[in-house]
Amino acid sequence: MEKVERIVRSIQELKENEIDSFIEKRISELANSEEREIGFNTDTYMYNGFLDEKIRVNFGGIIGESEGCEMVMFSSMRFNDPDMFKPLIHELRSREYTLGTPYVSVIEATDSYLSLKDENRRDNSEYYADVKTSIAVLSAVSEKTYPIQVYKSLGIGTCTQIAGVNQNMFKFLGIDSDYAIGMCGECHHAFNIVYPWGREEDAILFDSMRPVGSDPYLYLLDEDKKRKLFSNEVLTLKRADVKKAYKKLFDIDPECDIDEIDHYVLIDGDYFDKPVPDLMPTSTRHTLVFRRVDDLEDEEEKK
Image 1 (cartoon, rainbow, N blue to C red):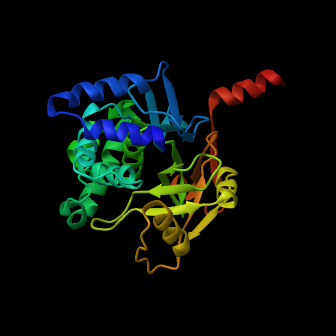
Image 2: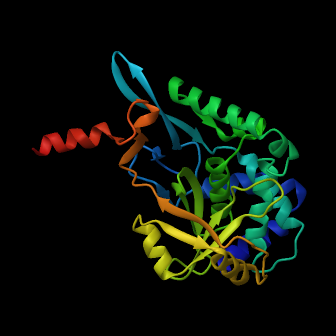
């Protein structure tokens, strides 16, 4: 926490003409030295680093046909916009420091950067969903990796983008966190795991994907819950876990009238599952499992 407090206080003391240079310096300190691919069709579905132009995130896939063969094409993006940190700095400079300040500021700054409080998102949810799907499909079929600025400008940021921006803001402030790609219920989902008290202590599952006007779902993960999640077991989280998280992190008691919230699980990054009915409507009993080609080639070499 000392490192986080030091960074936050240095931000709060910045002069207006020092902000751009501070962002540039901090990004250079966090920059990745090598290209890397994470998410679907990789072996990395939980990433604890900074997301920049060298990190390609695969967040979805579609099945298409090419020369008589079915193939999976993956949508991808990059988080490479230094402007995402400006609303974070604005938030921090407008607050008195408490232990919860960095986390509140990340929530508010991500909301601001991705326009998550825009009422249009609620009133035109189907339109935004269609645009998001169109961009994802275009990315897959064109094999083009779109930057976060596209999602920001169109106002179509959802879990993948929200958790990615959260991750970078956490890292910018020196907060230890993971960017996780998994499932929530039956839907593919992205969220963060945050370690305010160290990786060996309780953690917070930080899920900022939510309806306009509501607060993020934060869940306290004790040792047993962390073990289940990191072992790819389905983890059921309830109202009590939300209350514990808000109490321990912010010392407040939130209103939460839902008893059982949802079920989270991390995705095994070596596989991409696709229900057969989406591909062959006559079948309802099987799941197609697509595995990385290079993994299969490695197995053939071992035989």
